[in-house]
Amino acid sequence: MENVQRKKTLQLVQMAVLTAIIILMAFTPLGYLKIGIVSITLLMIPVAIGAILLGPVAGAILGAVFGATSFAQCFGLEPFGTALMTINPFFTFILCFVPRILMGFLVGLIFKGMMKFPENKFLPYMVASASGAILNTALFVGALVLLFGNNATVQEMFGGSARVIITALITSNAVFEIAASLIIGTAVTKALMAAMGKFRTASEKSA
Image (cartoon, rainbow, N blue to C red; front, side, top):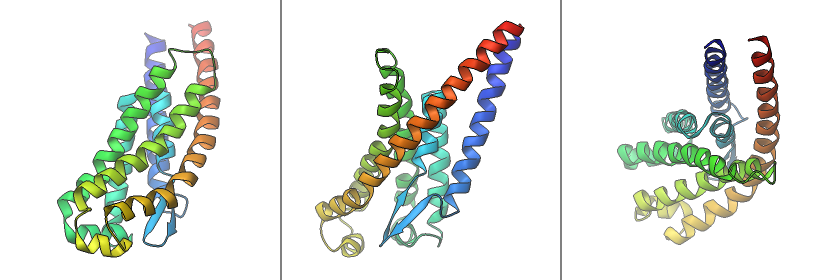
């Protein structure tokens, strides 16, 4: 029972730390790299880390935190989000939250699925970490096109149709975000998993 309580306490601490990291990154230059009217984000990295370490539900919760900070940016802090907010606040809310929640949940599922094939000890961490950036971009761009793709104001921002919007966002965001998520996510999660394994072993010996 004591070991279970320790595990729950550790998980709560990890969730609190990752939540704080997301909030800190969201409102400092650590989280966003401004390029034109869009931003490259690194906030999917702590979400992916949480999903890998703590599972799909934790990933979804951290994704919601990411979404909340993204939505907060739409109140005058980020030009593109602010523009979307003036067009349709409800659609903007959906755009900020739903892709990020799904991203966190799916990363957790991907990692669990990959761990069923433990031949390569690094591959599950690499695939799950990279999938955070891939899913974040794919889900966000898909939702943006679905909700705002036919809006004349949004098309004018990107200088063209929905196809131009997709091309602009993917080419400017995807490569950097995937590389950063792959490298940082894999290194951090692998190290933390090893540390957690040692912690569990020490707890079992002391019980």
